[in-house]
Image (cartoon, rainbow, N blue to C red; front, side, top):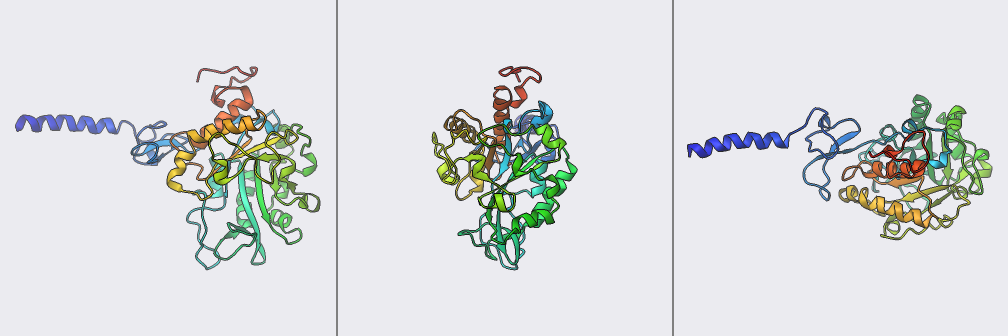
Length: 364
């Protein structure tokens, strides 16, 4: 008995130490962890039951493609992480006095999404309670139980980010149910965003390249806004999305393996008269526990499928739910792959060799 006890006392500490082989910010991607503090920069501690046992360090931010390579190419030669229903955030308190009865799609505030590298935000805007509100509703009608908040609060978060980060560009993709005359343009003006506005007159047609990112930054035209109402391009100077972008089917219809159909409002994905490509990859009804799996290998596979459907064009925007949930690299890895393909023909933007021609890839 004494010998057995001695062996247990020797072996148990060794096993315990092996399980806790990193801590205090030393843990790397997919290392075991017990808290966010264990994980290194750009990682957080997360449990994806479908992908792995226990908790591991997974990615929580993007790679800055502009700092890694350069920002001297046209805007449409880069890829940008996009959050579907960016405003529909878990735990947001009701501002109507009525409990909210609608689904959510994200966990972080808009400020945190932007800080983590999200550069495309999908927002649904409605007339409600005498103002413009962000709402997750149906049939074009916002209710007190589907409303999230007045849009100006989110727009002011975007204004603060752009003001604090003078080299960054943010794209907004609006599902627009605002019928008040000039109501949409007014809320942008009230939020102080017009000083960053990228004008419709500078947007390319017939599939031509967009301006260089460096020029957009130099001219402070760093907020691109697309909306779903065609008439507002003329009446309010807000670009009609389908004049400039193709988009695949959203929801469950966009998650069928080997298939990438276009959204009904969009022209065919291989319509090269539109310079931008957006790929949606999320469920019609978000299921948070399985999102970590959705945002991983199957997302990469769909981007390849949509590349083929779009006439051999890689996506510029990839839109997901719960953008930080993954089995490791997740949506961040997907965007790194897209930027690698777009910028140098490599499988990862980290493999692009600065200053060299296409297909020059380092062995990272």
